[in-house]
Image 1 (tube, helix red, strand yellow):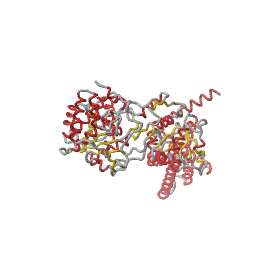
Image 2 (tube, helix red, strand yellow):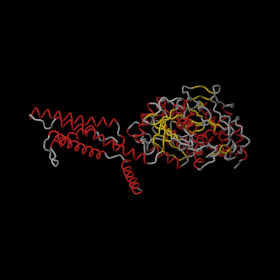
Image 3 (cartoon, helix red, strand yellow):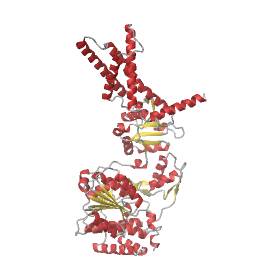
Image 4 (cartoon, helix red, strand yellow):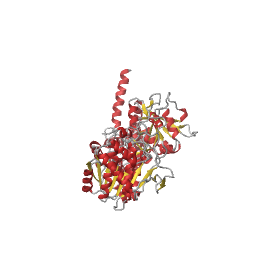
Length: 640
C-alpha cells in the first residue's frame, strides 16, 4: 500500500512537472493528427463492417492519407492546436467542431467534383460523415483528459482555500478562470456575498457564504480574492467589510481589471497580488490634464534634485510619459542614483537621462550643472525630512533645506529657467520642529524671488503630507517590526497624520507645476487624517495576525519636535480653489517686506556657513515667527 501511494505521488509529480510548463504546439499538433488518423482508420473499419466488405487490418487505404492531409491543412490555417490544453473550455470545443466540420464539407465537395469529372466518388459520403462524428469527440476528449488530469493534480497538491468576494457576473467569470487556471496556488471553495441577503445558495456547485458565517478559529477559507474594480468600490462604500475579513485572519488578494486578466498574456494569473496598506488607503484616481502637461514638459530639459529619493524618483517616472528631451538626475546618494538610472534606462523611451552626483549645498557644483545642461524646468525635491534626526542636527537641516533651496532657486533665475517647483511639506505649517521651520523658510525665499520682476522664472511650491511607503516612513518601519514579531512602536495613541500614495503625490506635483503662475503654494487635498494607531492595527491584520494578541503595540511618547497632528491650510478660509479639485492655493504670506526678508535670509545663510547652530536657529525663529518648538525639542542646545 505504501509502495502504491509512493508511486502515485511520483507519477502525479512527474505529470505536474510537464503540465506546469505549457505543452509545445508541435506536440499538440502531432497528437491531433494521430487522433485524426485513428478516427479515419476506425471509420473505414466500421463502414466495412456495416457494408460486410473485406477490410485488411494491415492495409491503410490511400483515402485515409488524403483525409489526414486535408485535416492537417485546415488545422494549420485555423491554428486549432495553439490553445493551452489544460485551460480548455466550450470555446475550444467549438473550435474543434469547426475544423472537423470544414474537413467534412471539403471531403463532400471533392467527392462531388470526382463524381462529375471521373464519374465515381473517391470516398463514400457516409464514410466522411462517420469520420466527422468520430474525430470531433476524440479531439475534444483529448483536451478534457489533459484538463481533468491537471484538476486531479490540483486537488492533490497543497493550495490555499479561497473565496471569491462578490456574486456578480464579473465575479463568477473570475471564479471560472481561477478554478481552471490557478489551481496550483488557490482552491476556490465558495463565494462571499457582501450584500445583506443572498439570492443564490450555490454557484458552480460551490456555496455562497455571508461574512458573519466566517470564523477566525474554524476557517472555511484562508484567503479572499477580489478584482481591482470591486476593491475600489468597497473602498468608497463599504470599507468595514475589508476590516472584518482581516479581523477573521483572512488574507485578501486582488486581481487586475477584467480587461487585463482576460488577455491571453495574463491567463496564468501571475498578477494576483496580496493587498497592502496602500490599497486600503487608496482614494479615487487622479484625472490629469495631459494636453496641458505635454505642452509644458514635452521636449524640455528637466532637472530633478533629490532624484534618487522617494519623491524625486517618482517624479522622474511620472515625467517619462510626457517625453521630455532630457532629465537631469541629481543626487548625492551614489547607489540609489545608480539603481534609478538602471530602472529608467530600461523603459525604452526617447528621453535622455543624465546621472549627476551633486549636493545642493555646493553652489559651485550646482552652477556647473546649470551652465552645462541649461535646464528649462526644475523640480527641487532634495531635502532632509526626518523630524527627530533634524532636531539634533539643526545646522544640517538649515544647510540643505534652506541654503540648498536658495542655491538652486537663485541659479534657476540666473540661468533663465522657465519653471521652478519646490517640493515642501505639511510640517511647514505652524512648525514645531527644525525640519518644518527650514522648509517654511525655503518657501518664503521662493516667494521672495517670485516677487522680483527682473527675471522670467515662474516659481511654485507644492505642499502635502506623508507619503505611503517613502524611505524612512512609518509603513516600511511597521513592516520591519511585524516581520520581526513586534512589538509595533507608536509614539502616542492619538497621533494622526495625512497620507497619500507616492504616485498620487507626484502626479499632483506635475499638475501643480504646470498651473503655476508665480509664487503660489499649492496645497493638496489629503483627505481625512489617519490615526497612526489605526494604521498599525490594519497592518497587523494584513499580515494575518491579531493586534494586541499576536503582535503587541507599545507607546513610546512623542519624539523631539513631533506634533500630535499636522496642518495643511486646507480649509476654505485659508485656501483658494483651482480648476483641479485636489489642488488648492494656500493663502500663506510673510509679515516681512522683501528687503527685511532678504536680510534675514542672508543672515541665516551666513550663520549656517560658519556652522553656528545657536545663531542660525535664533535667526530661523525670526524668519519663521510661527515656529514654536516643543519643550522636548533639543535643537537650540546644539552648537558645533
